[in-house]
Image (cartoon, rainbow, N blue to C red):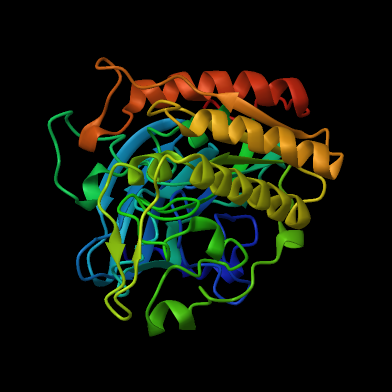
Length: 374
């Protein structure tokens, strides 16, 4: 390690930062699948981290030339971790580092940033431009919850999140795309799974990562307005509604501050309210992404009552806006053979969903040439 050169990300313009971030703190990995991508010709590569948490430690995955070679939690404080050593100098290596764990609203101490890369010789080569850019907006499914772990697992812990066993990653790789994720487990359109109306994913869509609470995340830019023009999505894939469906069968939520209660219920009036909420989401996404396709892809835990609601919302929004670039897409539902941990879709279900979504996106987006052995 005595011969290693250390450089901050700002000094390595060929390294691509993945996920929503700010221009003044690009090294902060807020969301699921935030990370780095690079093409490096040296023999040895390390990452210098800074992290903290109270309940949910940040797990990360490392991919080398398309193979998933490592996965580990980043310890609190500052640390240095090797990605690889002893490889052939001069040969380009395609490296991706992905944050597996979602932004943690309920753990304001949770954060992860990459302070620098340390390496021995070699060059960071320019990466090819992605064929397209995809943004995914959703809940626990889009956070990759349950995509790792045994089917019997029920504990709420960080290791059961995965950005690799994930329909977004699989879809993006098939299309040679760059992708970003905005998601939070348990949250929905009108409330969370337990009927808390303050936990709506789209309330934070206009910020970099506004649901990441606490003064440290604020200092890192989480609450800043997100600049949609800085990274123009070619398609926005919405996967929201599962928690609203679940909330309809759960007890009302009581606001501890006011004593008021809220509950979603499968009445015609409330289903109409949900449809209107989905229409409003589609119009909001269109306003922020005027040139993108919008695909409401849904059903990995079954379409339930929400399938019909969302189909109607997409049809209404498209008609009201005169918009021909919106569509609803039913995704394969998890079965006992494809279920993962915590009663969530497993890797096999994510793979099936990615195949369906890839086929749909391939029919509407420009195709790209194979870039790496992914």
